[in-house]
Amino acid sequence: MSQIPFLDIEKSVLGDIVISDTLWPALTFLCDACNGRFAGSEDEQRAADFIVRSLQHCNLSDVHIEEFPLRGWRRGPARVIVNGHMLPCIGLPGTPSCDLSAPVLLLGDGEPLDFEKAGELARGKIALVRGKGSHRLEKYGRAVQAGCVGFIFSGTEPNALPPTGSLEYAGQPAPIPGVGIAYETLCRLERIAAQGEMTGHLQIEAQTFDAVGRNVIADLIPAGVDKPDLLMMCAHYDGHDIAQGAVDNASGTVAVLEAARALKTAYDALAAQGAAPARGIRFALWSGEELGMLGSSHYAHCHADELARIRLVFNCDIVGNPGALFLGVNGYDTDRLVTFLNRLAGDRVFEVQAGNRTLIPYSDHFSFYLKGVPVLMAATGGGQSPGPHTHGDTLDKVDVRAVRWTTAFAARALLRLAVSSLPDLSPDLSPDLSPLPARHATMEEVRAALRAAGYEVLLDRPSRWS
Image (cartoon, rainbow, N blue to C red; front, side):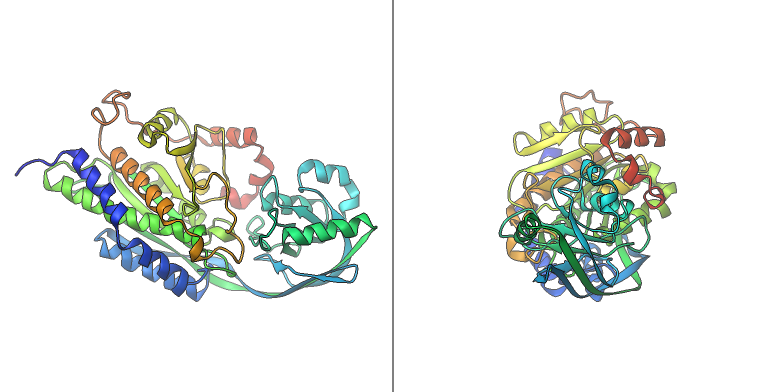
């Protein structure tokens, strides 16, 4: 039997992904049949069952669902009335019900300096903050710590829609109610504030209940290798209850499914000629990301004894925006990995960040970064995401070419990293030196990186370290 060159197998994988006729049907099912796949809902369960069937069809090993507890939330009506003007808004997931009146205080972008300037004036107020700058949860945490009694979170783009997003707070029920408003509503409130004091009335109806989330896990194990080291490719499949969650993150979900299918074919071709890769690949689809990375955090906690075998986590979150591919790399000793990724990508990648220069703590890779595992986050669009977290995140927004390119790049990178050495594929690396980091980061190194990135206060919450 003649040997098939590795590069020919690799080209076959890439060609398979580019011309695949399974990507669009999977994307359509997740968006149209499963709606937003909100964690703990019937839509989420329907999506999990579909993902299981898809991975089983690829003939992967140990395809299964792992359940975890979560606090379910069901939306009711929400109203904001300021100085007698009723304004459009939506409740933020996790918000408690309320019927309260209090002064409304403009707090700029809700950054530390904004709250520092307000001082005691913030106590007992409804905080109104813009969505620019730091993450929504950081602004919310500052409002809670400042003694605010309500939280209004504004969009930042004209002609957009009110933003949603969880108020998960240290694994506990959200302590103060919160709503999202559109940019245009913010502008109106700023005009009202210019005329004098604002009095706000928040009316929110919502239900909370005990629910179950579902992670879907599957393995691609090299033939004849017992308990190999693993690479992990993952994405969250849950979305919000107000839209289809197409870009965020059905796009990442189908990227994982397509890569799994194509890489299984490559592993089979290598095994047929006695050249099985040295490493396996674990595919994971998480739920509960939009509620605070609940699924991936639960997995990292419950599988702590297995994490030493995971050499890299490749997380796909929002890979359906048009535009270039961004790769953010974090962990100990990542310079060789960044060099490898840059050379593999050529000039098609928007940016690759080494080490801890860019730390993104609000996606599932971060659950593993906290445990010291090297991680990589892939996203497209150069940071421009107009639809996610609004009613506008629908199937028509997805750039299928971006999904295919991300999938092809991920599959190619993972396939090369799975082989034992890369002397012919990466001439800049010595044959005995893998691009993968030599070890995991220690907890001391992780904490130091968090302090340097300014996340120490936010991430000292117990739930983040569990």
